[in-house]
Amino acid sequence: MPLRELSVSDAAKVAKQELFFDTRSVSQILAALKPVTEPLPPEEARITVHAAVSRISVLYERIRNAVEYREEHLLRKWAILRILRRQFILEGDPVMIAHNLIRELIAALYLPNETLPESLVEDVAWIVRKYQAMSAAGIASGKTMQWVMGIVAAEIEEVVAPPRVEKALVTFLYQKLSDRIYVKGSNMDDAERRLQIFTACFRTFVKADEEQVAYKLVRAYVPEWVRPSEWIDDPMAVAEKLIGARTRIFAYLHSPLTQRFIRAVRPWSVSLWMLREAVEQETERGALLSSRSDTHSAVEGITAKREQQARGKVLRGTIRAMIYLLITKIVFALAIEVPAEYYLYGSFSKFALGVNIALPPTVMLVVGIFIKRPGMSNRKRILEHVDGLLMAEGPTRYDIRMPRKRSAGSAFVFGLLYLAMFCITFGLIGQQLLRLEFTPVAITVFFFFLCLVSFFGYRLRLAAREIIVVKPREHLLNAIGDFLALPLLRAGRWLSNSISRINVFAFILDVVFEAPLKIFLGALEESLRFIREKKEELSDE
Image (cartoon, rainbow, N blue to C red; front, side, top):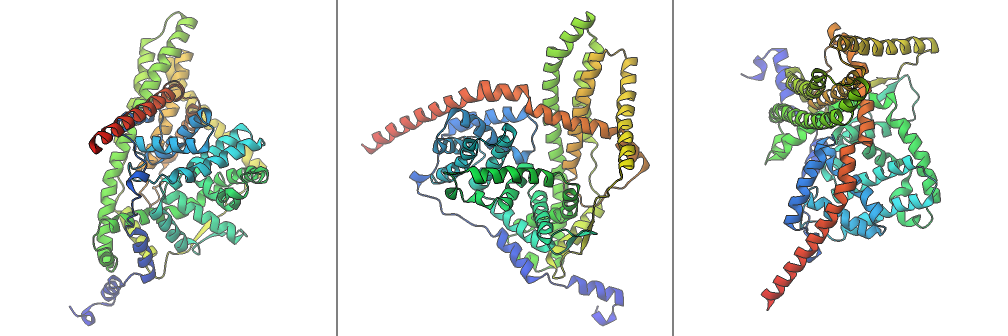
């Protein structure tokens, strides 16, 4: 039908469909996603790990990751941190530490084999020297040095596995949002506002943890950090500056305003994820982005696929959490609950013990099963945000409200309300357990694992919502549920953070088992290399 025969509203719809995306935005996306084939170094200059050593290392990593709950995308960074802790105890030469670290990462398949150049060892060694220099300065506490090691681990991961695409897309996202997000009723410095937007883009798009974000902030607050050759022999001034930056970064990461920037940026990050995957799966990427309807169709298909993958991710996370809770609960029961009840009461309740062992993994399974999939409104909002990223008009302006400042009186009242929430939740559950003839010891163990499983379930729900950009509907029942569940979640988070520092299984694997295993694997690889060299000599003859 000719355009003149359409109604005004229909004509407007057709005209909107025919709009082309902004050429500059399309070019940035295509440039960021353009495949880059790095030339491989000569074969003799590549870092190579024997396949037999790799198979053993991979098996160990699976066992190690099963006893400590970590997000999948953070496993490599945590492996770097774990290896560094051990290497700093066993080795003092930064080059050897870097060499051993990279080889262990390759063996565990965190990095590709027979691909990375030997020169990478020296690049990582410079980062190791920075930690050693901070330690030698002697002005930082133990907690500060643990924080510095986390910064070093984040930096090493960026060096050994450069996030080229992620870096380009975070920059694209920041450029789109830097002049669109403002704080209403605030005289915030523009540089600080832009830094907030950039770190929110980085944190939401790559799902970075606090140490990875802190590394980015260290580069902003302590620019000398990336130029170690200038201060490595006299690190005192940089060490003092870094300690000051740590306090500032900690306040920054835990500021309510920072969380509001993250919430403002997150829907755009999710939409950029979907757009990235849609473009990467097309052979004619330029053709796809030249048509709004084709782009929408591709993004919608990717969103549907990611919804299915989210279910799989939730299932894997549920299984991992169930294994972790089941193993720790059985050991906890055998080592503490049963002996304590025998000592105090002369016997123990098999019913209470069975409930305490079975309930945590069962609750995790139920939580994983009943996590809902997002509706069509979520896909529609993602498409709207894709248009905002690619159209010349850009995203709409978004104003963040400053966190409300409460008076001392209202803060006291809300503090009492918060305390009442804890008393009501724990009191009601504890009363029912007493009716079931649980002993105080069994009740304590029950609460311990109920809080943990509640927090793990909450994290699983967050993982399932990682592609949801619409706000959840608020209902009275949800508010009541939040009122009762919040104390369990807060206690669970505190316990999870505490357990991660005193995880007995992780300690046994790291201290008792891992170091001898890695020494054995190193000796095995040297032996296999020696045998291979002798075989090559025979073939040369």
